[in-house]
Image 1 (cartoon, rainbow, N blue to C red):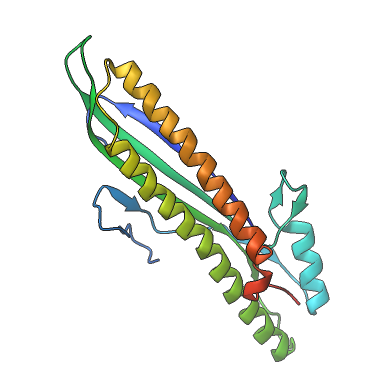
Image 2 (cartoon, helix red, strand yellow):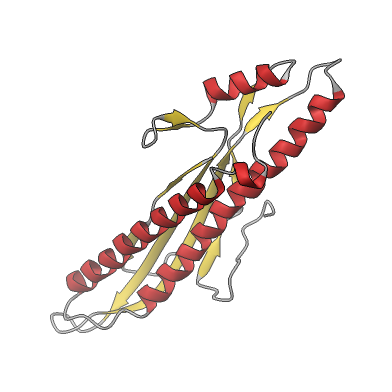
Length: 201
């Protein structure tokens, strides 16, 4: 499996702020985790070889690794904060919120009539393992959101709002690098989910 993530940050003059509802998954109310959305791609077939072939053809493509994967998680921790201070003298973060959004790109197969029940069972077991792997990516993104929030809240007062924004952008870049490294380490350690049972057939 693979991961695509991005950290975005915005400076606003006024505050702006796995079920199907918006939920918070942290003790800090300033961290908001959106319910994951699904972006399935449809495959068809009567045999395990058919399904494998279709996933190889239609699965999400990773330009970095120049190959397709069976599934993909797209995550975006987004920081939004307001600032306050004395013009030309100081600027500090007044309020900050981080929202983490998530999209799972997964294969979707509707077993045709008469298909072998053993194949259906194998597919369902495989898909459950894929979801476990992708939720691991989800948790990494949530953890990155927590870390980004904590570091933004800890930013010291700056001499100006442009200087404060520059410091916040540095924090963002560091958080992005750390998140990307975490996802890569996770995929390497799990062989993109294979060690967790996400292998078909």
